[in-house]
Length: 221
Ligand SMILES: Nc1nc2c(ncn2[C@@H]2O[C@H](COP(=O)(O)OP(=O)(O)O)[C@@H](O)[C@H]2O)c(=O)[nH]1
Ligand SMILES: [Mg+2]
Image (cartoon, rainbow, N blue to C red; front, side, top):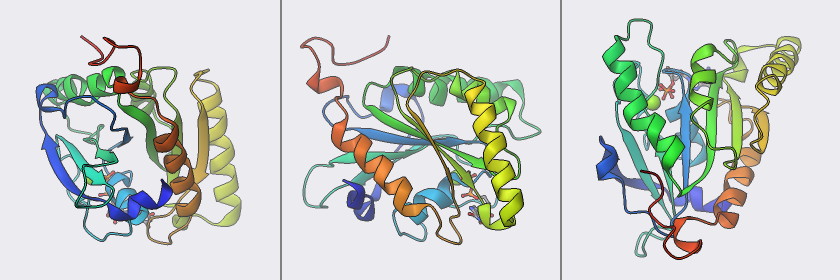
């Protein structure tokens, strides 16, 4: 399924949980991270598309879940990639945080179709308290791939140190989720194949809402 990323196309924008596509057999991979961490750029690079996910220069503009469909265009989607709103703008009022929790937080904690989560971190910043808050929404069975993005901004020694630091910070959280960590650059196209492999593996092995026990479909409250 790794190559399915190359078929990505815009599907829909979801501004409220009630507008989510009905849960069924279609697995989803969500990209999460602080505003400006490089989520949209990572999606574009992984899908080999220039402007699929809008790589915004204006942090915090996209307060919605953006769905991209994968698979042959003439068939129902095989999977979805979901770009989530960034969090952690310095000036965000409490209402913005509440809005994020209501949509993205609840999406992360409730969505049965979620086959995996890609957390995008700016490698120069590492794991922040805002990222820790976000990770607290995740269910323990959902696998996590952490992309230390913008790795092109650091030299070899700094990069190795940043990787070690992020690894220790993640380990300290004692999450039971399956987890992988990669250094990544959307501009220099590093880490793409490994990231695609993880995502492809999630999508092809996910047992979603529709494939569980009858009556289980639909997920959270
Ligand atoms: N040098 C470098 N810049 C990047 C990389 N990824 C994203 N950026 C830049 O970082 C800014 C934010 O990227 P964007 O993808 O919009 O972040 P988002 O808010 O998380 O979706 C933009 O100016 C991008 O061009 C990267 O791998 N390397
Ligand atoms: Mg974005």
